[in-house]
Image 1 (cartoon, rainbow, N blue to C red):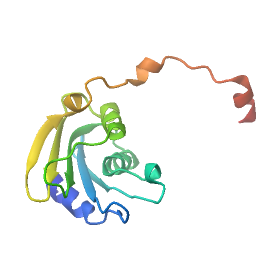
Image 2 (cartoon, one colour):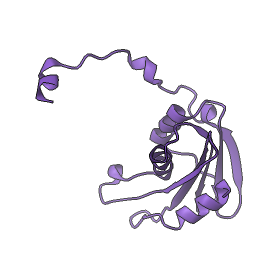
Image 3 (spheres, rainbow, N blue to C red):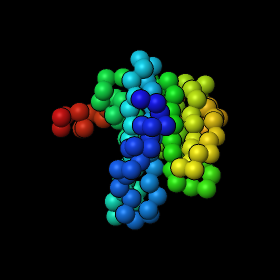
Image 4 (cartoon, helix red, strand yellow):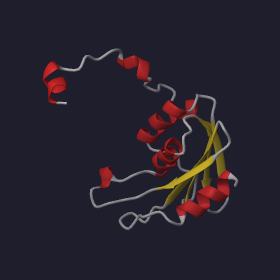
Length: 140
């Protein structure tokens, strides 16, 4: 299945009763599998799930760990980039040169890369070793 078809199909299942803003995302993993996700809202807006995060979660659940390309589609007058949190998620599962296509239902597209979306991505290696407090470790 191509990424546009997968993203359009899953977008139809988005749950966006508050904003009405339905988004679909699809990705191809390095091993060629296609995964898709849609946004899911709830009354506590920050607790909702973005389409990109849904697709990444499906990829991880499917046993893949690296994104080869991604497509995001929304019903907007212009292509809309992912939110900051999803840009960070993308940077953790895709290299800076991985292509991300932003699309509208009317057919307009914009092609960019993960690196262009988040040029100063925080890398997990930036955290260093963080010791677990003894009190927390004892409770486990």
